[in-house]
Amino acid sequence: MATNWQQWVQHPEKSRVRNALFQIHVWVGAGAGLYILFMSISGSMIVYRNELSGRFPIEWLVNLHTNLLSGSTGRLLNGIGATCLTVLCATGAVVWWPGIKNWRRSLTVNWRTNFARINWDLHSALGLWCFFFIAGWGVSGIYFSFPQIFNGLFLLDPADRYTDEGLFWLAELHFGRFGGFAEALWTLLGLVPAALAFTGVFICCRRVMYTKPSNPNTQPSPVHECRSDVKRVERVTPPDTEQESTY
Image 1 (cartoon, rainbow, N blue to C red):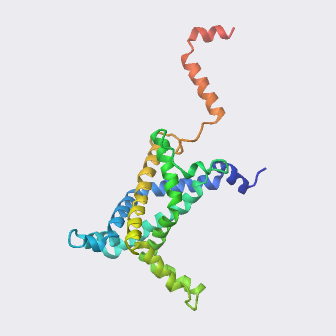
Image 2 (image 1 turned 135 degrees about the vertical axis):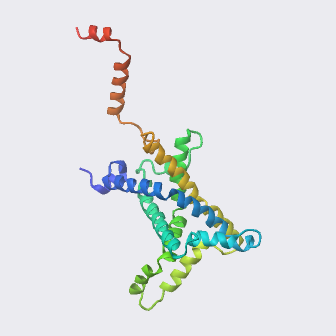
């Protein structure tokens, strides 16, 4: 019998742990999708905070992005949202793995197929290639909302040789204000969570409302196909023919 590791490497769709994480990924994404869409778009605009100042109510947008215009309550909600984003990154990294035979296919998008397949490929590929950026925004969002949680790092680094500097760069990387190219890159990549939210909602609707597999690349099992064929034959076979075949 294959070990759990071998099963995950070769046939991850059969892993109970992977399937449980997939359910978490789907339902957390469904609950936080609209929030992530909003924070993604507003965050990309804030990258050009200085340039937009005077032409756009940018400070209002900053307050909206930072505290949801609700002070400490909004900051708390943002912390919860950032935690959801981090959970989606962690579970998504596990769910992404399609097996040793198919992993290369999940790196790209097949643009010459149906919308459901393109949507799945786009969600999968974007999530993988932008994983570290999105995870960084999630963790730094938690830091901005719940900084006290990170005090535990000083127990691992009592001399403070790395912790303060590490947290400083975590905050800096959230905004990406390192010059023209970095700002343009952060603005573009900042829209990726919005794209993931949109594609993820479509995947969820396809699964829940239309009871179709989340992954359109999934092929029905031979047993399922056989049963489907039998049902089709039963529906189209006239009663007289059925009666003759029993004799």
